[in-house]
Length: 328
Image (cartoon, rainbow, N blue to C red; front, side, top):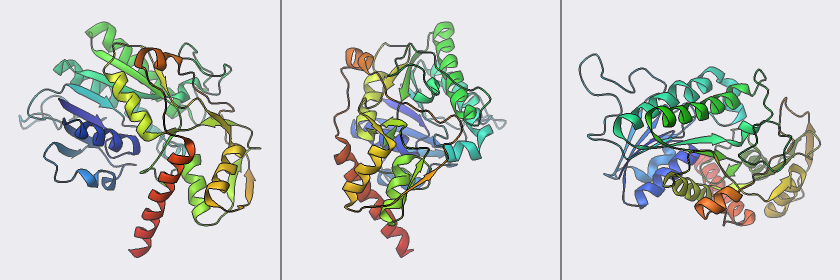
């Protein structure tokens, strides 16, 4: 099988590339490295089944023929069997700093990837997000819930980019018959997350490893659920091989308040770290928990990795990264 993975140098994208290579397939990874890192793909260097292409999936030369008559930037010497569109700026810190690039990845980038899938008769999977539900009025969130999203708020560049991408995927399926899948991903964590990306898991672990107070936004009563990255990748692969065209939630239904999660971090690190409270950001969801009954029924999928086990592995990764950084 031949795979095209956009966002390949990112957190989830790099783990997906690893899994596809482990399955014995060939992968072309694409990333403009605005937030991704080649370090995430270091384990694949020299593998003849993997090639990294540095380019912007929202660029003009991604599809079609260049002016010199050569094939497009993503020519792999033959058609792709699967196209995976993961390219996006997924953390609040990144998409608030780059709102236009975030919108481009969800709109132009999605269409470019869909065009490649249409051209090659390939399967197409879009990694969408639980942010499509916004600050939800339904709890837990089912795929049939249409959401409560502020279309002009600070987070709208990310939320609306994904909602548009979902609509575009469905349009290509209905008009062109592209075999599309849409994964609505809930909070995911694990090795290769960036410590400075602003999301709660790396933020807490970064602070805990430095012995700094844990920063709680609001009063800490807002809830999240946390899925380990290997479980998520398993769900993505199962979904990509299914005939389900409408969105499917992928996440861990075990729900914690941010205060409860902070206590888990304290126990894990064996330290009574202080807590510091700051104002809650605009449009920050108060509740977040997936209803995964559809994934269980259609994909026979649910998370397997316990939070404590996943956090231990993530902590060990961050310790190695910090040690390596201190030696430079």
